[in-house]
Each structure stands twice: as structure tokens, then as C-alpha cells.
Amino acid sequence: MVKSCNKVIKSSSQCKAIGRLLNYKDLFYDEIRIDEGHVEIYAHGRKSYSRCPICGAKSHSVHSHYVRVLSSLPLHGKQVLIRLTTRRFRCKNSKCPRHVFSEQIAGVCEHHDRRTACATELLENLLLEVSARKGAFLSRPLGVPVSASTCLRILYRIPTAYVPEDDIHHICIDDFAFRKGKTYGTMIVEALTHQPLELFEGRTAEATEKVLSKYQHLETISRDRACAYAAAIEQAHPGLAQVADRFHLMQNCSRHLSSQLKISKQIIRDELLAAFPSGLPPSEEERQKSENMRSQKYFEPIRRLLEKGLSEEQICKRYHYKRLVVKECMREISRDNRKQSQQRLDEILEDKKLRIYVANPEYEVNRNTGECSERNIQMTRIIEASKTLSDLRSCYLAFQEVFKQKKTELLDRWIEKYRLSRLKEMASFSAGIEKDIVAVKNAIIYDMSNGPIEGLNNKLKAIKRQMYGRADYRLLMLKMSLSKTG
Ligand SMILES: [Zn+2]
Image 1 (cartoon, rainbow, N blue to C red):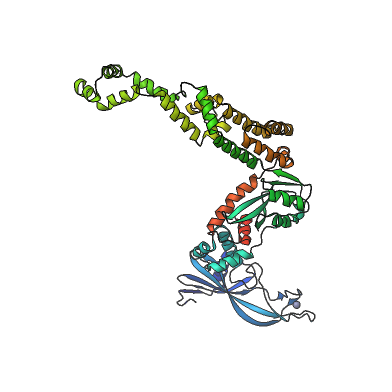
Image 2: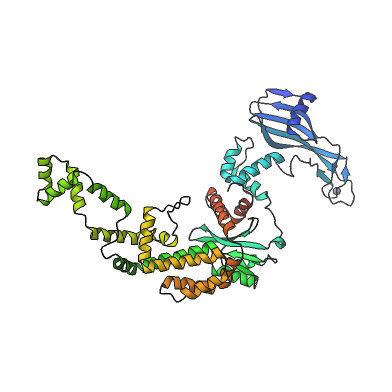
């Protein structure tokens, strides 16, 4: 309630001018009161009649009045309240069950609303991007103050974008963690438009089958390699083309490669020791460093003095060499290549990047100039020297090549080659592929992947965190389909 009023505008021309700012054609402005923090606009409907919401009959017969208070968008930081004198009309249609109805002025607000339509729209746009608590906090400076629970009510009233189920032909399906390690949900996305279609609790075959059976015109489904989804799809739509996701396939292959590296560590070590009997070749950097040291003009004299049996102390005192310089020369002379080579070997076998070097010969190669890094040259030499490492590299690259060349016969050949391989992990991966062969072949044939869903997964994570992980599925789905920023 406004206590002290600074300015009252009653002149119809001035009221009209301010009313024009609001742009409500069906309102007549009676009076405007401007206070320090508020603008109060007194208005009533311009039309002399209204239509019954039940039967649609026109009525001129006014029964009574009441005042509705609507909060609208602010004017220069002042909160705007519209005090709308609303009439109740009698419905004159004798067959209509409604006797009295309130007039609704089109475009101003909805039934029972306490805000104008434009204020509601502003809040809706805001609340789709931020949490209800933040929305409630921001609504105050925005001039349309609402509480956090009202924010939630506003959100729940927004209809989600509806896509007719019969129009859906290609979808992607994947799971997501609602709480990592505890509760999981499933997301279904339209493959072409990337429109989220479903978000539901659980990732079991039963739950998925129930949802999938709603979509009767499906042609292809892209999924990761989870058995539960494969079973659910087969149950809901027997014979439907299932496409295994290429990214998950490569990721799986890479995981098996890592395990194989761990298992074969001793074998690789033996192979490398046999290939380099005098120790692993030093890296380019190490070689350069050693060469630099030996070319220093003080190196030879100090070396000779050390050979004569003089101590570090004596050399420093008698010949005025710096202690640091003498120490460096001693280190260079006493360098034990065999010991260092052991160390280097251990470092390489423990290196987490070993998998990357094996899987990607192009790693650390400049794409523009084709120049290889020192490390790349060294690792290539090592991989080529070890049979296990080079076998693993060719196995991984051959699998990658299947998808690059998009030839299913290459996959058959790959399975044939590696199913009984001495590389046990790769053999087990190949057996897994054989079990899911139709979906994997479809991944080669169809130009379809779970890419859209992976992108939306990031959006989902952002929204989930924005709401401190307390969002329910309905709210999550709403924000997933309508939020612009995520
Ligand atoms: Zn009626």
C-alpha cells in the first residue's frame, strides 16, 4: 500500500500518454499515482460488454465490481501496480450453467493471475535460466518481486515443447547420473533436431521399454553399448536398427588397450631390453645436454685433473674453479648409461601417456608443418622395437580404420584376426564386438551417433548443479528443453 503520494495524474490526456507506454488497447486509464518507489495505475476495461467463458454469449448486464491488483513491468526502477476495476457480468443465456462471470481483458493477464502477462513472461525467461532462489532474489531489483515458491509455480505452469510421438523416427538414448554412483536416469533425444524427448528415472530394461513403446514409428536408435538398452529396444521394437555409438566403441577399445598395457608390462620390458642391449637410446634433449657439457672449455682440464686423482676440494682451491662447475663435470663423467637406461625404461612403462602414443602415431606432430616432437620420435622408436607395443598399435589403428573407411567387411576381418590373439584384452574386446555385431555394423553403415546426447549431457549437468541437484525430473526436463544457456 502506498502511504505518501507525490503526484496524482487525473488528466485524461496525461493518463493516455502513460497508458500508451503500457500498450494495453482494451484498458481505460482513470488515474495515475506516482510515489517515490511505485507507480499505481487505476484502470478499467474499455469495452461495455464481455463474453461468458462457458457459452461465449455476449453480456452487457453488469452484476458487480471488484478491484484486482496486478504487478507489471517497472517504469524507470519504480514498481508498477495496476489497480484494475473488474466487472462481473450476468450470463443471459438461460441454457448456460454459469450465471455470473468476471470479465477477462485480453492480453493483460490470465485468470487468477496477480501479474500482467508481460511480467510473467519476464519471470519465465529468467527462471528458465536460473534457480528459483536466485530468481526470487533477482526479481526484486527487476521490479516484479516474487518468492522462491512462486518462482517454482511459475515454472511448472510453462508447457514443455511437445513433439508428436508419431513424428519421431531417429533417436539417441543414454544414461546420466542424477547422483553419481547412486541414482541414474535415462535421456532420449531426437537425433536430427537434438530436441530432448524424455527424461526418466532409472536405466533398467523395463523402464526403458515402457517409454520406448510410446514411439511407434521409430527407424533407428543410437545407444551406447549397455545391454539393458539393447534388450529394452529389442523388446519394444523387435528387429529395429540399433546403432552402437562410435565414440563409446572407440573408448571401449582404448580401455582394453590400457588394460593390455598393464598386463604386458613385463613382456614389453623384456622386449625392449632385448632390442636395446646397450640400454635405451637417450632422448634428443639428454644427448644435447651431454654434448653441450662436453664442449665446454673447462670440461677437458677438469676431467684430466679428476683422472689424476684430485678431489673436488683440491681442484677448486688450486685451480680456482667454481664448485658448481666441478660438480657438473663430475656428474657428466660418472653418468652411467645402463642405469639411466633402466630408469628411462621404467618411466616409459609407467607413463600414462604410453597408451596415447600407442593409439595415436600423430600425437605431438605439428599438423601444419608435419614436424614431430622429440618425444614422438623417441616413442615411435620404442614402439617399433617392441612387438607387443607395435601389435597393439596396429590392432587399435585397424579398428579405427574400420570406421574411417566405413566398410563392414573390414570389421569381419578385424574380428577374425584378433579373436584368438595372444593379446588377451583385445581378444576379449573382439568377442564383445562379435556379440553386438549387428549394432556395431550399423555404426559403420548409418551416419548416426550419440553426439547430440553427449552435448545435452553437459547442459543437464550444468542445470542440475544450478539447482544444487535438487531438481525433479519434470523441472529438469522443462529446463532441458527450454533453457537457452544451460
Ligand atoms: Zn454463459
